[in-house]
Image 1 (tube, rainbow over the protein chains, first blue to last red):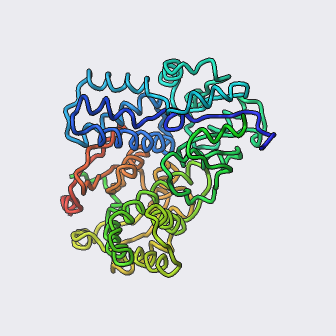
Image 2: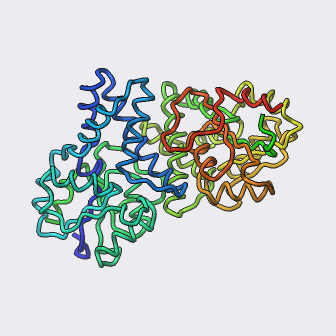
Image 3: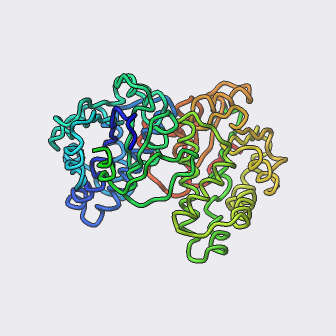
Length: 221
Length: 221
């Protein structure tokens, strides 16, 4: 038990919410392509915000999510339409939580719970609201306020400033290897929510904790 | 025909040399896993240099290539050994050229031909030498000299300084969408060698030219 933890900071996409669930909506609009579209959509979304950060060419994650969807449809030679893209982007604002997310957050509600995401507020706020999580979080932080994506040190520094803590007092949770690596490199304590049973990233940045899902956090209850 | 071009600058991995050919050596050591290992190996290699650039945590591409191989073996629950990894890394120094690469470069040999790669000299120089291309290039440039990976503006700026030209006088060739996008964003003219017939990247950075392979460059012969 680590008593130094003064904030529990959660990544959103893939960590609290299941981004792969969007394949259902993709399948309905494009039968036979749900899996392929949703996989490319997510991988291009991540690639594009990293590339824009590297090139110094910022766009909001909402805009990038739209671009990544366009690419995913093009890759599969599927006819896009404004109506279809609007429908799928709206579904992205209503992604389902993982089955244990709400119960775990509720059990930890006396702690200082915070969201910290690459998502811009125009996608993040409706998502948190739709899931009924608003009351559970003390802060909902978006890198859009400084336009520096995770995993840059500048992004985690922004969160730290908003928390008003020392970096070792923060426990940061993410299912994304790149995110938990960036947070560790910056100096946060980290818990990797390794939902897919993947190997450790080979980046010399071992997380402090590894859990199969968010239930692992209940040791701090 | 664009007479303003004073240097033809080539990316290496995936552009001149076939990184997917390594699946043959992977298959020999790990029967049934050649394709899977080689795919993860390449994708993690690219992810890791981007992540290290974003985190401000540089390592040479040779070291990253080793790390990415370790991950790829772990992902497939395969037993690694120093001997196997050494063998595969040595194979990476002897990747085959694409079938048309040498002929096209030879036909353009009166031009100012330059290599510009994320590869460190310890992997780049043996590769170029093994393929017998040394005489064809005026310069072999590596970002390892400044420790800033493509697609950062700093990396292309380094190449530009070494060339002593204006950015619009450079034609940069790459098969990698992220690379050709970064070069375009910086201000180079760009030719995307779209070997796999992929859709355009949705980054508002359309390349000046798109060719199926390097033969498209013979218009400047």
